[in-house]
Length: 630
Image (cartoon, rainbow, N blue to C red):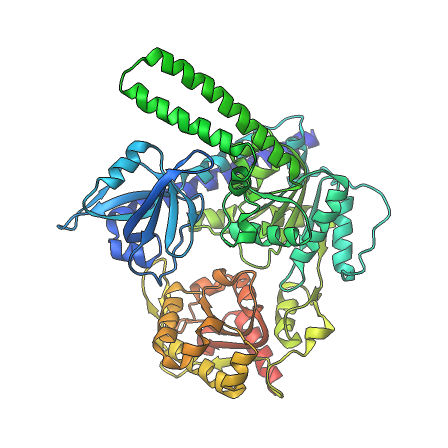
């Protein structure tokens, strides 16, 4: 009876998640529709969701037999865009009267860098309509149905699962079923610290699930790579996933450095030759059987063209079918060869449903950045695995959820958080950090990690200048630093505070000495939680001639844009300044944890203390910083 009750509780919980995911889906779809209809092209371009105008380059069939076209943006090249591999896009034209005409097909991004994209088209007719237009052409992001469809499918499968491994994992993660372990002597890894060694051993001993909890700078990737490497002594092949392409690239690169053969499904964002050489497409193209397959496909396309002209149709149809069978045979052979050579299959959670992975199962699935992934997205990949290892930090960035009600309802509760709460015995906390001066780290350790983090001796006293305070708060109270609201998704801006941030940075560069700054390549991060403030700060840096020699060493971005990164010097502009103590977005303390832990040697926070310190977190942070200066 009890077991039945707990199962129905789990199912209800997952059905509620499904409902919340529908809310998010409907909200995002509706927002997208409104944006598409109401927002002008200029605003879409500024938000990085549209390129206009574009010029088209060559079109061809790629190695996977998809018809693609190259496009390049002509203007606004300095604006950061949000196009990435796998995202759906639509083309449009704008005539002289300003009215917009959307083409009636959707396409998919196959490859993108700063100003150039390769887009997969659905048909030759789509290509024809693009090439025959006489108006200026543009391309914008389209609503992404695919990832939602895959998440709904995965959730539905998990809810219905019965008497199989998926049902077991569901009951372990959410219910009272115990997580089992293997018993054998722990291994020694003298090159790891004791908490990293413990974490790798916990992964090795886990029969069902283990969690590597890696606070900032504690070597989570190093530990995870070690755990994957060790697992490969016992298993022939594992799957490694993450929420974002960038995180998949990062861990793939580290594995390749260790000499592990990786097959990367989906296109990397960190595009360099090293990355490209282990992508599925590149490996497919360089297979010895590929030239033969290419010529068969070419022959098939030629026969289709002839059959349209009506000549000897029956005969041509037979030839096409026979060539298609041969092409399929070759594709299967190339695939088997590529998967046979690879020890790690790496992809995003959504790409784990890629057709080339159909029917493949893995002993172990590693999910990196698990604290940033929606639970339904994790289940897409978990369906393929017997055992799951999650790595991340639920005290840093949460998943991105656009619908506030869905987030409040619990859609932002990740699978990693669920297991941390339900099965604390499966968690290993990494406790030694190798990034920050001890004074920068200490506040985060006390507030988020129960004071358990320690600084490695080699970073404990890191600094740039003698007798410098590693962490400062520049209180902008009474300096006419007023916040302004600039629209829903851009939030707020505080121009006076932005100017002050720039002068603080100028002053600090002078203090270090211009030559030394360049010689030692001291790098700087300028962070703000608000997009509008980030864009304004970028503009100020661009317009200021003083920064010209240092621009390559300065990165300006949102907190989310700095996830997983670090800099020698970090300045944070908190923007909020009002009489009511309203701090909105800054209430998400996990974001602030990310922001204050990016700096290795110097952290400068700019903010109106009278507004911010009404919140206990900022009050405590302000007092902590003041105490360091006494």
